[in-house]
Image (cartoon, rainbow, N blue to C red; front, side):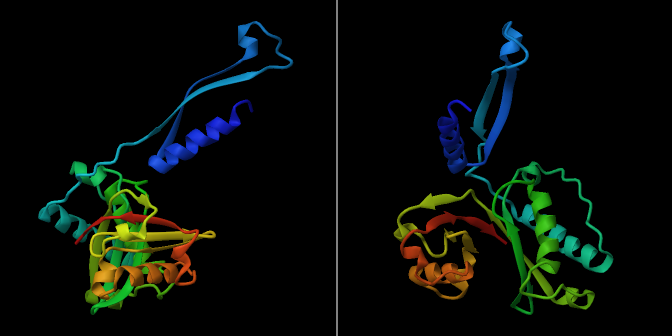
Length: 233
């Protein structure tokens, strides 16, 4: 491939800026210009772009209640009947692609938490899938039983796009969630976790490293740090 290096650089840059998308504009070969068909040179024209992410996304109290009900229904339907709830959203906010986590608590204690960092699905689909996964696929817990449903409380965290940072001092406890990635391992903690545990910034960094299965000081050298914010309800 001629020019492979620049193509890779362009793709990596687009990925760093957001959800990288590629659209093939036209494809052809030299035979179409009168050349031989036994051996051809291929030509490709494509555009690399990112989908814009809304930084002013917000949810009203009514919208939050609707999403909480959807999450609860998704858990109940799957735990009781092994069925995925069907939902047709009318609200435009619910069809925007958003990353989100669903946390399940039983009598105040964590019972499951699963989510999707990247905004790959419409928000309502992300909530349904994360709710089911939190109930039955969190490897730290056995699947939720029908008898437990009455004691479960649902919490949703809708994420903003990730921002890579080079200076750990930029992390604001109570505002930022944190992702630490190093040596193929990745750990994530939501913004509310350090607040609930009364952690300092450094303890937040240490605990995120441990969540990734890394030494607690792995953040100091060679790690990639990402922050994000969340609407938590």
